[in-house]
Image 1 (cartoon, rainbow, N blue to C red):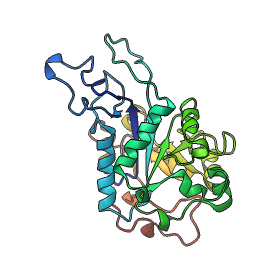
Image 2 (image 1 turned 135 degrees about the vertical axis):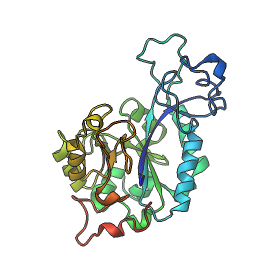
Image 3 (image 1 turned 180 degrees about the vertical axis):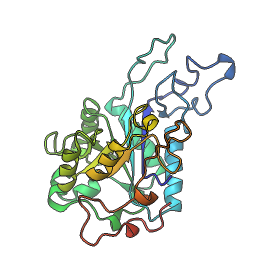
Image 4 (image 1 turned 135 degrees about the horizontal axis):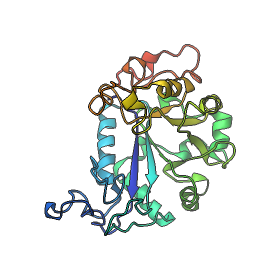
Amino acid sequence: QRVRQVELDVFGDAEGGRFATPALRDPDAGPVPGMEAPGIKVLHEQDVDYHSTCPALVDCLSAIEAWSDANPDHVPVAVFIQFKDGPLIFDVADQAGVELWTAEAMATLDDEIRSVFDPDDLLVPDDVRGDRATVADAVEADGWPTLGDTRGKVLFAMINGAPYRDRYLELHPDLAEGILFTTGEPGTDGGDVVVASIDDPVTDGERIAELVGAGYLVRTRSDTPGVEAPAGDTARLEAALASGAHWISTDHPGPAGGTGQHDSGYVAELPGFLPARCNPIAAPEGCEDSGVEPRGR
């Protein structure tokens, strides 16, 4: 599918088994495979939406790491982390209790990432900061490391704002020795913010282009559940592509897109079904799409 960005919703499970027997699962079916061992779990909503391809975070990371090893020339892959520790909004009896994402709990996320990836396989805030006081200072003065220096690497960023961002900064002041980049409003939220998550490229397309032109990285969305894909509406996708956002999140990546769920034929992909391309806002003169990731798959 030539995807270069994924989002993982993570729940703490220090002792294991917290999400192994969801409330809506047939009790005769037994525990959900992969949910009984201690460690961070990946699922959308506890008890009701738990059918993850890889229930354990380390398994998800291992799949990414194996693909990266097999394709060492890829552009940096972004893994967006969404910390989840809230109750269900649904009225479900016997809900699984959740563990709060404290600074100490976030340290276990760092540890699990490091257990899978070698340091040279990661692009972390310290790689960007260099000798500058903050990563924002570095991006504004020096820019990001080059594509040539970051091929084959994986970048992690959290989607959450406060209080999760504050807790991670408590653990890693100015993101020193941290794994995750934070997201927010660059230039306003603090010197740690060099990545923005702006979901609506139709309303905020000009702001996305402005941030991209200033050297920040931006994630946006080409579709929302149950809206664009059933209608075959590509206006938001086209706005996302034109905005220059570096990552475009979708529930319907090519080549099949939403064809298995909807009759509209909606597919979100880069022109030419490329894995990456020259940025329409920030690419240097002479950039050619074919050279961004020559052997991408």
